[in-house]
Each structure stands twice: as C-alpha cells, then as structure tokens.
Length: 350
Image (cartoon, rainbow, N blue to C red; front, side):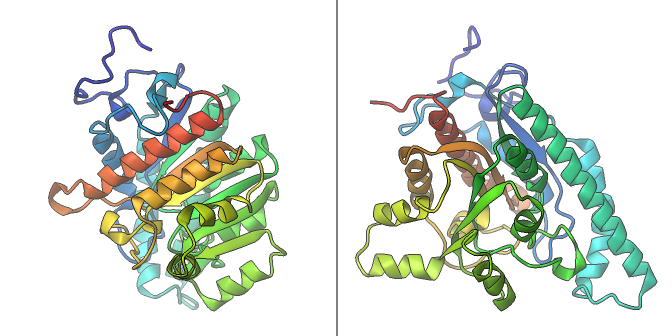
C-alpha cells in the first residue's frame, strides 16, 4: 500500500477512482474509460457514465466482506479521454438524424455519408480501446472498461481474446445485442455480441444471462451458433426459481457453460431497472444486485479466472441524481474484487 494512505478515511475530492492513490503504472487493475455512445437509439447520456462512476466510486467503502481488500492490489483509472468525447460529439450529430429515420436512409446521400462517418468514428473508438487495453495487458495488469454504450468494450474484448485465446464472455444484459448492423450502424450498441461472434474468432463462447428483450432474428442467430452462444433468458431463470430451484444451483448451471478464462461484459440494464432507472433502454425484470454478486462469486468459486470486465450503459440522472452511478461503482468494485481473487491477487476474508 501507499505509505500514509488510510483506507477507512473519507476520499478526497479529486482523488483517484475509489479514492485510491495509485498510479496507472503500479496498479494491478487499470480502469479504461470510454465515453462514447453515438449509436444510442432510445435514451441518451451514457457517454457521461465514466465520470458518474468515478464520482460515485469515492463513496464506496474499500473493505469488502466477500473479496477482502481488493484495493491493496492497486486500482487506477486512465484519464477520461477528451479525444473520445470529441469523437462521440461528432458521431452523435450524424447518428441522431439516422436514428430519427429508424435507419431508413436509402436514397438520401447526406444521411448515407453521415452513416459512413459514424461507422468510421466507431471504428476509431474500437481501435483506441483495443490499444489502451492491450497496453494494460502487456504490463501484466487486468483491464476494467467503463462505457459509454455497450458498443464500447468491443476493442477491449478483441485485445483480451488475443492475449487469452479461447476466452468465454459472460454477458449480463436485458438485450441479446445480436442484431446485424442495427439501424445501419456497423458497431451499434445493439450489435456488440453479434460483432464479437462474427469478428473475434478467439472468443470460444458467449454465455448470456438475464436476456428479456430480443428480436426473432437474434434468437435464430443464437440458435444457429452450434452452441457457441448460450442464452439464459430472464423468463426461464425466474420460472426455475418459481419451481423451487435455488439461485445458487442456477448459477452453477450458468457457470458450467463457460470455459476456464472468462471476460465479464455487464450492461447495467441487466439489473432490475429500479437499480438503473436512467439507463438508455430499461426493461422490467432482471437481476437483483445480490443475484449479480452471487453470479460473480459462482464464477470464481468454480475455479475459473476472470481476465477482464466491463460495465456500460450507465446514465446519471437529472439534477445531479447519483443513484445509477452509485450502483455502477459498487458493481464495478465487486467485479474488480472477484477478478483479483480469481487471479490470486486478493484474498477473501476467512
């Protein structure tokens, strides 16, 4: 630990994520913020998610009853990149016009050109995120990505899969995100898992949890994947609980579908929307916070290793409402804690 740091004291304004004093160079976990949400098709504001999570993280107590003292391994966050925010603003100007038409832009040269600009900027964000994540991995640290909309971790997944071929994705979400170029955008927030399945062959498995909003075409795509995509629908999970099955037993079956190395991609709308009321596309149902924590615990207790995580689609509320950021910051700390435990870098309390 940094000499003189008191983990029980109040965090100082302007301190690092979770109020910690670590530099990026000495931290075992590096948080990569990606403030980009150009293709959002309903509620907006996820580009402000990284700032909201950073601000709320300073209210999180650092001792965790499940994962111990994850802060001791060192957690640091990169500066929120102004260039990515600028790319978001540029892309959003074009995207809003396309979204207003539901993606039906054939015959309109201005909108067709706008779509090409959005796709180009989205690719630039993907490349930026991949490079930033690869740098974290190259120095032996663990990456945690915070978006932005759910398109933002694509580059990180690509970098993690290159370092850990055969990795599986544990995808917690209200939506399947298996649409093909939704509203015309090649890297839509609604297409990330389709893009991972199609463009990242080193990902061996995608295991989805909490899905309760999808198209028939997405359902067919998953079923045609020869088992590479496994979906645990929210309705089926709830039915099993109504029939008397414990959540712990359900977690065992979910985790059993994953390979040894796991990347966790967590769309905040995978939770009950009372926990994330301002997210862009809330859907009734979803996991409680404790169910989500039990799922993370189940991954690690099974002997699997978490090699990267992301949290996205966090939107701060109006008039300074910090509830969504507060929930996301605590979820992020749980994700980081269990990731460190799974890599032997933190020890749960006895």
